[in-house]
Picture 1 (cartoon, rainbow, N blue to C red):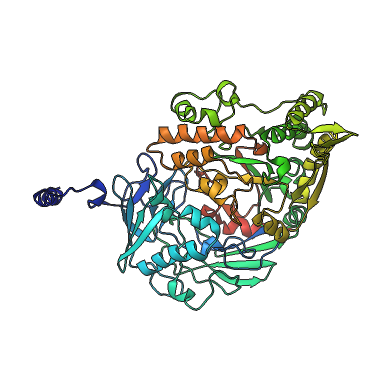
Picture 2 (cartoon, rainbow, N blue to C red):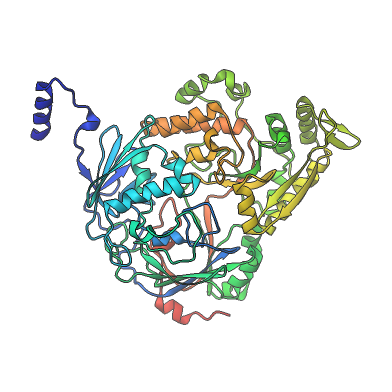
Length: 604
C-alpha cells in the first residue's frame, strides 16, 4: 500500500498519470473468469480427488480409426489419442467450477484489474522429462511456434496476444490487444509448454513418429504405428505433489488400441480386450451389454449425471454450397428430420432434443429475448430475422408415428419461396437443376439414423446419397470443407469465449482446418462473438451468450440432433474412484486400479 502511494506521488510530481493496468498487480495462486476462486491459496487437492489414491496398474482403452503422427499441434496428419498427457500447461482448471485456473507450471500469476496483461512466475522445479528446466524462453517459444506453424485453431484462440516478454528465467509477461477480452489470462494458462531446444532442429509443422519431449505426468513408452500407443507414468514427475495433481494420474501404464469402427470396438470390450468404454449409442446402452459378465458383477454399467454443457450436435449445412445459402432452404430441410420417431424407434426414448448451442446450461436462450439480451439484439434488428423478436425459437414436433405430412407441406412452402419447385417428382431450382447432395459420415452406426431422414427428403424429390469413409479421408475432407452435409458436434463450456471465433466467425470461414464447418460469414454473429469474449461479469456473459445462441438458431445453420445429461460408462470391475464426482467432467484420471479387484477379475 505504501509503495503504491509513493508511486502515485512520484508520477504526480512528474505530471504523469498511472493507469490501473500499469500498476503492479498482486501475485495470486489462481484466477477465476468471473467471481471468486473456490480453492484458497493453501488448498492441498481438489475435492473430487482422493489424495491417497494408490499408484500402479495397467489400463487399456480404445480409439477408432488410426494414427500416423505424434504431433498433435498441427493440421497435418492424424495424431494419436491422448497426447495431451505428455504436456504440462502454465495452469490447470478445476472441474467443479465454471472456469477457474490454478497454478501448474506457474507458481503464481500477476493480473491487473482490466486484465490487459498477465505475468506468470514459473516454478523453478518444473522439468521436462530429460531433466532440463522449463523456462520463460520455452513459454515464449511455445506461443510463437503454435501461432506461426501450429494448427489454425491456435491463431484464432491466441489471436489477442499482442506481445510476449521474457522478464527473467522464470518470469514471462503476455500483453493483450484488440479490445476487452477478460478471458485471455485464463486462455494463455491453458497453452501446452513445449521445449525450445528439442524443436530447434526439427520441422514443427510436419508429422513425426519421434516421441515428443514433454513435462507432463506421462511419457510415451511404445507405439505400433496406426494400431496402438502406450503411455507410462513418469515416476519422478516433477509436479506429482502439486495441489492440482494430487490424487490424479494414478495408472502406471495406459495403452490405447485402435479399432476399425465402433461395432468392432464394442465386441472387443465385451471380450475383455480393453477396460473402459464410454457408450454413445443408445441402442448399445439399452441392449448390447446384456452378457454374463454384467450380471455377475465383472462389468459395471453406470450412468453418472453431470452439469456440464452438452453443446450442439446436428446435421451441418455447408453454406459454401449454393443450394444451402438460403436459410429458408435450411429451415425446410430441418422440418423433414423426425426426431420423435427417431428417438422412440432407434434410441429407446433416451435423448432430449437440443434446441440450443449451449444446451444443459443457463447460457441457453429460451422464450423471447428480454433485458440485456434484448437490448443487444435490438442493435441489429434490421439484420436479423424478424421472427427472432416475436416468436420463441422452436423445433418441429411430430407424433412419432413416422407420418410427417404437415411438415412436408410446410417445407415445400418454404422451398417454393426460395425458388425451388417440384417438377416430374424432382425438386428443381429456377434453372431446372435438381437438388441433390451427399451426407458424409465417419461412423457406420450413424447410417441407421441418416437413412430414414433421406427417405423423408426423397418424398420432396430431393436425391440424397450417404457415404461413410475412414477417419483419415473424413478428416481431410472436413479440413478442406469438401462436403455437403456432415454430422457435426460443437462442445461448449460454462464460460464460452475465444473458441467461439473458431466456431462461427467470418475470418476463419475459409481457413482450412477451422471448426467453422458451416462457412458462416455474418457480421452480426461476428459482433456477438466479440461481445461474449468481452463480457465484464457473469450476468453479462449469460445475456450475451443467449443473444449469440438465438442468432445462430434463427439462421438454421444446423438441423439440431439431441443430447443427454449423463456420462454412460461401462467398465471392467478393476477400478476405484473418489466418492465425489466432478460437476463438469467425468474425471477418469482421478480413478485408480484397485489391486484386490483386479486380482479377482477374470476376463473372457
